[in-house]
Length: 272
Image (cartoon, rainbow, N blue to C red; front, side):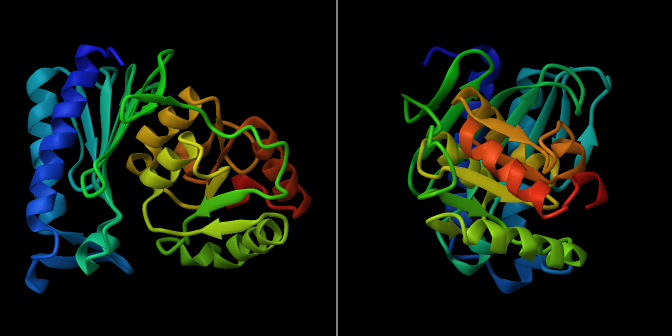
């Protein structure tokens, strides 16, 4: 696809960060990994990747905001376009040598809470590149992709993530999980929300649901899903998913079925 200058910068940043991460993969010393919260680890690789992505993106767009998982938000103008970056999505996989992780870069039209207009997810292990810009469609390795248009949950394959950062919500999550599990063909949990959403955009999965995500976990993937013809909302079917971190994503028929299922359980997003 022919992209914008912002896309060019995102691709450069993602590829350079991916090369850096490959250099660390399988060779991190235990002293280079630490817990930043219960069940939530960060490594030297995360920090170096974020620094590199930030250098590339703000070098190209010095007036932009940058919101990264490790360093938070920086920038002179709160209304400027914002880069929302997970420099290593799937850190727990990475530090254990499980080859399923990615660099995730999203961009808004203005402000950290503004409209998402660009998404890049790069898996350097599998050399899998997912790209989308608002109004231009979504692509996997240069080929346009679409979310599946399955008519309902029967036979569907869904991806999910466990709420390990928000364990107080486990009972609610398990209610939703059980109800989904009994309706679909399969549910997978691989440990990278960015790749789950990218795979949904490419038709590998029919839907995705998770509680308690951070903005950098889902920003790029949400653009991919939307540009591939999918729907991304909170658990009520509304627009609060970025603020609350609770996400339902799928093609329109499966998404509608998921919203109905959650509603039937009496689960309300605003109460999560």
